[in-house]
Image (cartoon, rainbow, N blue to C red):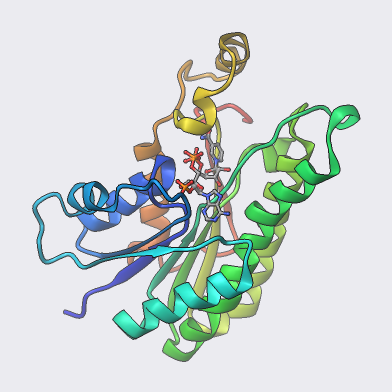
Amino acid sequence: MERKNVFITGGSRGIGKAIAKKFAQNGYDVIVNYVSENTNLEELEKELKNGQEEIRTLFVKGDVTDVASCTEMVEQITKEFGKLDVVINNAGITKDGLLMRMKEEDFDKVLDINLKGTFHICKQVVPIMMKQKHGKIVNISSVVGIAGNAGQSNYAASKAGIIGFTKSLAKELASRNILANCVAPGFIRTDMTDVLADSVKENILSSIPLKRMGTAEEVANLVYFLASDENSYITGQVIPIDGGMIG
Ligand code: NDP
């Protein structure tokens, strides 16, 4: 059988890395985008392959806010693999603050990476998927994009934007057998949430019926389901994974 491949933005740590590992465990070739200079690619490759030497990996350095960088990454992928089965738009940041104190640059930066980065990558990969007449796209939103959150108006706007964007793509691309969905995680233990003050964490935990943070692996399981051959009829949906947080 022909091998499948997956491209994950921001796949060198956190939820992105867990997604990359999940696909690798299931026999996919894995293409990981990263941006930080200090990423240990040797270590990452070892972790992803985990002894399965037949898995092909490709690490593409690039900033999702930069169109030229996105074009270059996708060119590298097509040169190496000649196709692209699955794309996961996971790269994202927060720059929290109440509206009254939020700087314009913090609003722009969050929108640029989270929302526009997703647009840039989709713009590059969709022509490939249309030509193939198949493809799966999963964009990582957030429950904050559905329910809102005080102190995160920029982040909520970016994540709500991803939902509208994905629903539109699903409608545009269905005739070419390309499915596009969003996963909306709640409170997941990663570098992004490690920086929160204990009091903030306790406050959030008290609003989660399951009374714990989620793990990156739990998110990866859902993403994998939506993007694998197991899913052939779900498109244009937003699936929360939040321990019951937004009900
Ligand atoms: P982390 O902070 O652990 O990781 C963020 C990832 O995004 C890193 O791999 C980072 O790359 C990458 N990234 C940041 N900026 C850029 C850029 N300009 N170009 C390319 N890559 C970039 O975050 P999480 O793993 O927690 O989050 C992953 C996704 O899940 C994000 O979209 C986030 O909004 C979303 N999410 C997370 C939740 C949580 O509770 N953790 C809840 C809901 C949604 P590098 O390592 O090279 O710096």
